[in-house]
Every structure is written in C-alpha cells, then in structure tokens.
Image 1 (cartoon, rainbow, N blue to C red):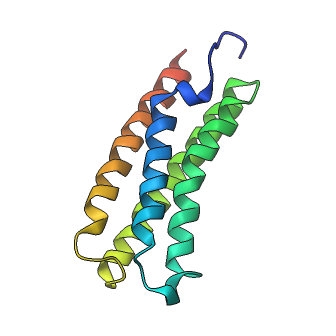
Image 2: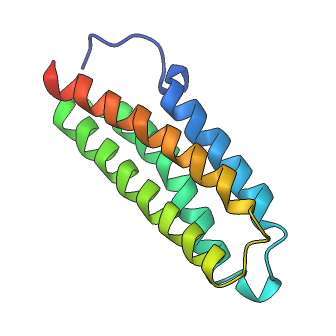
Length: 122
C-alpha cells in the first residue's frame, strides 16, 4: 500500500479511538476495586484494542490485511459497547457514566465503517 503518505496517527478514526480509550481508563478508575480483574479489565482491553488494531492494520503492506484489522477493531468496539452496557445494567458504572462513552464509541464506529467502505471500494 505504497500510495499512502503520513501516519496512522493522522487518521481521525485512530485519534478518536485513542481519546475514547483514555476516557475509558479515566472513567473506570471509579469502578469497584473488586472488578479490577473482571469487567474493568475487559472494558479497558477492548477499548485499547480499537486504536491498536487500526494502527497495526495501517502498517500492513496489503489492503486485505488492513481491512481485516479494521474489522477486528470494529469487533473490539462492539465488545466494548457490550461490556459498558453490562456495567451499566449491573450497577458497576456510576449513574449515566456510560452514556458519553457509548456516544464516543458510536462516533468511532461510524468512522471505521466509512474507512472500510473507502478501502474496500478502491
């Protein structure tokens, strides 16, 4: 994919995914300590996986590999959303703290879909 210039860090989707991950870490600091190795850890790993897979895919030489890593990022995003919904339902997350995270996740998801469509069509 030699036609690319710049870096994965220039991608708005990567930037937003990084922002989401930082916010997830900040938000989960207030979650119960007995969940540190449970849902808190899963939420953090899923969040961190999104920008990591975008970056890893960008570094691949073939478009097909890049698309596959973007799809993995999409899966991690859905995993994150599900874990956040679980945290909300079981009362781990303070009232309403997942609303902004879910909105950010939706924004990242839209950008990922746009990027996937662009790369798949070209």
